[in-house]
Image (tube, rainbow, N blue to C red):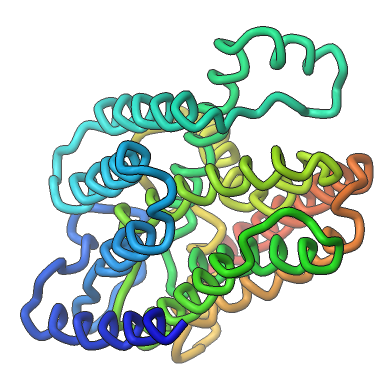
Length: 337
């Protein structure tokens, strides 16, 4: 643990050096859904770089080949951050390729959805189960990138994810590497604090890597603990996943290209509302409010982690509140304009 804290201190020192040297600058010139919230200074996209080092050091039991797949996803994010005309189709193709390689090499595959007829297909046909798992990876990865438009929102959400996994595991004697989850929580809290101070941000590289690793980690956790309903994973990861699917349907309805980024996500609506209400730090407050809202909406999962019916009901309630809040803010902001 002493080594871990020394590493955190090195991260802080190195991040200051990155800021001074203007290395790994922000990606706001290229990403429309991330340049909507601006600062008077540039924030380095160093969090993903730190996370990659963290995974290499503390999850080296995955083996070099699997670590390479995580590194490849990180590089895809770097290209997305820094290459202005990086093709969305090329990015998606690479995401699919490395997702397939990881899940086949680790056998991290979803085969239980608590629906008997579907389970038969998932358990007897590796192509179907692998395809479904890759789809889940893609939805989470790109949804996480979508919600990463204001400070604290994405990092805070993933703190909740790992915190809830740790809590239900400790309270119910589940299979979990507590040593690792403690480290990643401390690491994420450190990044959260730096993000609050405008010292770092995830960027596409950090958002893709964090969500890619978490997708793998959560599926492994569910597979190792049959008593935990797979819908616990659906619930704790509902926000980025629904943000992605909602954005796709919204763009199709508005006859827009689904591959073109915009600034009409929920966190943008919250940010504009707070900014118009004269909040001085609307950027940070937007993310913090969404963190608190998700914490409140997910809290019952700590008790009903094994109840599929309750978990599905909670997912539907969360979606209802999301749509209601989105509609309310859209109507409010439309009246002001």
